[in-house]
Image (spheres, one colour):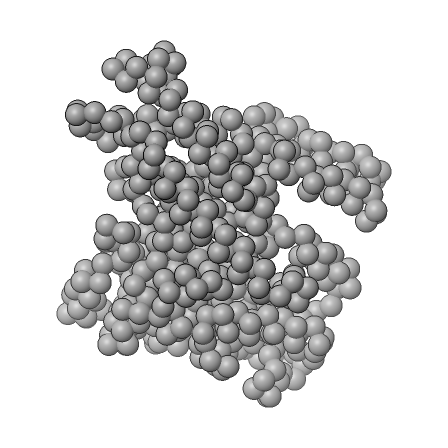
Length: 473
C-alpha cells in the first residue's frame, strides 16, 4: 500500500511548481459526484488512488505549491508526513506519560524548544493542538480559570480590530458574552492603540466590570502587523491582566534577528499561540499553546477519575491529559520532532529570513507600478496594496474597490500565483503573503509580472471593454 501511494505522491510533489496555484473550476460538481452511501464491498487501492490524485486533489487551492501567496500558506514539509505515518502505524498513546514515556518525552522536548524560541523560562509548559484556533481557545479557558471566579461573566477581554476572529469565537465558546470582547481601534500601522486600550480598561473598571485578558498580535492575518508587545506587557502588568499573544502566523519568525527585534516583549507574555503549520512550514493540523507558568495549565485542566493511571509527580515530566482539554489525542509531537532533529533549526531560520527579504523586495517592486499604493508596509512577510489609477481626480473607495476586485481576479486567472484580499477599513486591499518554503525569488517575480499585466489590462483599452470605466483607457 505504501509503495502504491508513494508512486503517486512523489510525482505529485515534484510537479508542484508546474501545477496551477489554484484550480476550483468544476470542483463543486466533482464534490457532488462523490456523494455515496456506505460502501458494502471493497474497492481496489489503485482505483481509489486514481480518484484522489486525478479527480479530488487537483480541484483545490494548491496550498503546498510555490505560487500560493494567499491567506497564510502551509508548506507541507514532507518530513512530517513520514513522521505521521510512523506515529499512526505504531499507534502509541501519549496522553498519559506512563503509557509511552519515551514518546511523550519527545513531544515534551518539542514544546520546550518552542518555549526556548519564545524566551519562556524552564517552568513553562505547552500542548500541541490541531491549530491556532483550539490553541487560542485553550489559552482563554486557562486564563479564565486562573484569573476569574466561577461566576466569570463580568470578565472583559481586550483585542485589536485586527485580531483574528478565532479569538472572539473562542471567548464565546469559553462562556463569555460576545459584548465582553472589547475591540480596540488600531493605528495607521494596524497596531492596537495603547491610549484607546487604557481608556477602555479604566472605563470598564468604573462600570464594575473585571478586565482580565489582553490579547496582543505577533503578525496579523490582514497585514502581518505586530503590536507593541513590550508596551502591552507593561499595561498588562499595571492593570493586572493575563497577557496572551497570538503568534500563530508570526511567532516562528523569532528564529530570525528581525523577528526578535519586531516582537520584543513576547517573552513577557503569560501565554502565546504558535502554528508550526504556518511559519515552520509543516502540514496543516499542528498548532501549539505555550504558557509561561506551566502549573496554570494544570490548574485549568486537571481532573481525576478512579480508572485513570497514576499521574506524574516529577515536575520535569508531563501527563498531557492533565494540562490539555484532550484525553484521547493523536501523537502530534513526532511530526515536529522529526524535521527539527533531521534538519536542525538553522535551515528554518534561513528560510524565514528569505521570506522576509522576498516580501520587502515585492513591496519595492510594487512601488514601481503606476497607481499601486502600499496600504500596509511589510512588518513580517505580508504586504497589502491596491491600485489607485494616477491622475488628478480623487476616486471614491467604492469604485476603487470594484476595480481592485477585478484586478485580483485577473491576477489569479493566470494561475501562476494565488493572492487573496481583505478590507482595511473601507478599502479593498490585495495581499501578498510569503511563507512557503517552496516560494523563492522566481515565483515572486512571476507574481509581479502578473500584477503589472493585470494593471495594464484594467487601466488600458482592453480593461475598458471589459467593464472598467472608459476614462481609464
